[in-house]
Every structure is written in structure tokens, then in C-alpha cells.
Amino acid sequence: MPALAQPPDSPAGPRTPGDARPVLGHVNLMVDTFIANANLEDLRAIVRGMLATSPPSVAQAFTSAARQRLLRVNATAVPDTTEIFSAGSGEKTATPSEKLHDILIRTRTLYGSGMGFASLKILTRVVSATVGLRWEEDSAMDDALAEIDADISQAIQSSKEEIEGGRVADFQAAREVVHELRSAVNDSQMDVMKWDGAFPFERAASSLEYWRV
Image (cartoon, rainbow, N blue to C red; front, side, top):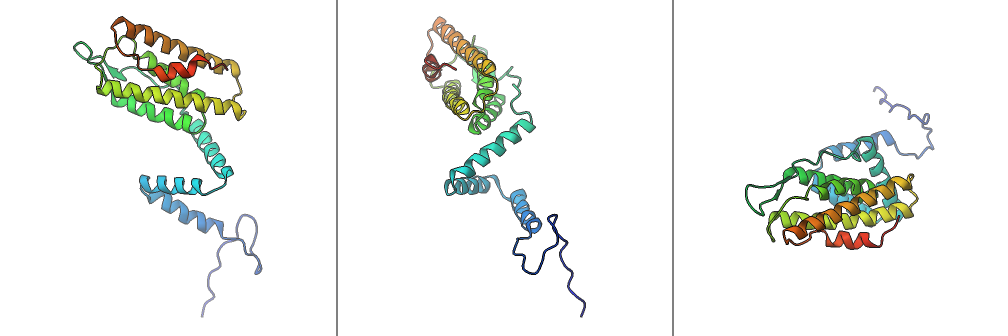
């Protein structure tokens, strides 16, 4: 009877009879196969469950890996924000576009992984794009702006944690981001007053009022 084929030696060296180390190549292959074929909802549930039941160091490692990935794919670059809103053909007919949805998803991955200042830079462009537009209350535009207002508040909190975590290398650049956002929010408030609309970024303005970097 022919002898069974032996698995190849691992990079760390040949396995001895008393070596209880796992065959990492085989395990990683199976996990990778699962990840490649699992649906998005299952992956989200698994990641949430794992992070919720693991020590805080695991969540820190996860967000660190997320930031490395986002930097590698250049997700911090400010995207083109033209045409993220449509002005419409009449009074108060502005509407959000699918392009806005995609940009907001990017900002949420940034501030959610601890890259608050990078997300604020993008959100500043989004706020500036609302100047000159008019919309009805309780419209899709009104709902989108409420989401953006909440995103700004969360991105500010993420930025504060970024500072506390010692991950801000250039404080002057961070201050410029905050200054530009504050100017964009003020411009929006002045513009909305011209047509007696409801200022959509109240939470953002309140969060920015006493924040100093």
C-alpha cells in the first residue's frame, strides 16, 4: 500500500511529531473561501458578533486594518461633488442624487474607522454644494440634509477620538479642515436665511461652536 502524501512544510520549518501548531495555510484557505462566498449581511453579523464578544484590543486591530485598507485604496481623496444635488426646474425642487449616496457611504467608512478629519474634508464639500439650492420641508432633500447633519456630528466625534488616539500627524492641516467646515456651515446658514428656509445643519453648527483643535 503506497504511503500517504505528506503536506508540504510550513514557511516556519518542517513539523516534528510533537509539534501541535495548526496548519495555518489550510485554515486560512478555508476561511478565505468562506469570506469570498458569504453574503454581505452574514459577514456584517459575524464581524459585529466577533467584535462585541472580543477584548477591546481586537476592535482596535480591526479599525487599524480598516484604516490601512482605506489608505491603500486612496479612499481619503476628496471626490468630485458636482451634481450631487439637482436644483430642479421650479422653486424649492432640489433633490439628492445617487452620487451623493455613494459619497456619504465613503465618509461613513472613513469616520467609522477613526479617520474623522478625512471624512470632514469631504463633508465640507457636500455642505458647500447646498448653497444656492432650495427645497421643501419633509422632502427627500430635507431627509438627506438631516442625514448629512448627523454625519458631520459623528465625524467630529471621530476626529476628537483621532486626536486623543495620537493619530493626527499634522495639526495645522486638521485646523484648516475645521475652519473650512465651519465656513461652509456658516455660508449655508446665511444662504438659507435669504429664502426663509430651515437651516439644515443645526447639530453640526452646535458641535463646531466650541470645538478648538
